[in-house]
Image 1: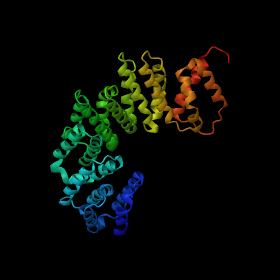
Image 2: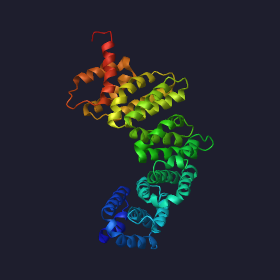
Image 3: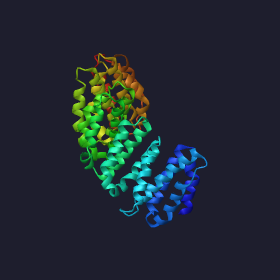
Length: 379
């Protein structure tokens, strides 16, 4: 075991390719999870020696140090609850969160959760430190790191801490802070990471925060709009069937709003529903696609282009290979039915279907076939 770990530290973690490093970190964590409990006294000194060593090549050392800190975090969950080493490890993990690499930040987030029972006394301090960094730090990498850290910490303390330490209230205030784009973006990053980490447990809060996320889609600052899209994707990928039922009506209602910005953001969120789990997707697409095709004739050009993008997102999740190759043609028929319906139907007639057709494919096909059947011409 020490030989494998020394190899990982000396060779693998210093690899110039980020993807290789990420995989090696995951491999190390798996080894520690399996064999760490019986070998804590053996492995801890190896990691500590490395972290206390002076670096000859700074850049390489930084890369390896991140990996070693993550290994130490993975090993620390096998320590006793009251072991003083746990506190030192948590502090080191929080420092590594500032590394602008998503793979490292995700790994740290996962390492933090099991260590939280030892940090119950410092919880309010820890949470407010991460929230502060997430909303106010000047660097995007640090804000994103703090969001991942916060999600790991919340998972460790349990869902009740969202209310106990006012986390959701702070996110709300951040989203409505008109003076600071950083705070708005930070709140959305936090929301995205919490959705991802807590999954279904976070759903009740998702439904409460939906109106604020809709507003963020039409923010003046591009970075905030991007963060809103990522948050929507994370949110949709975790929704349960019940969540979809609760969210759909308010989004479809948003399409009838007079204000074009609300329409546009409702359309963008409907497009993000393409990232729902397959089962939820098959429920909601038949309702969504007809509405999106209506939006394509909207008077405002931005609403129209949002509709086209949303339909492309739906097209991108089609699993059926025959239909997937026809997506551009089908989308043309949906956007401009007068000129393209006939051509799309001709192409469909020439297609031989070998694979079973999934719900997203049908959602795109049926409106076109329906339109073809309603046409007066005998062709």
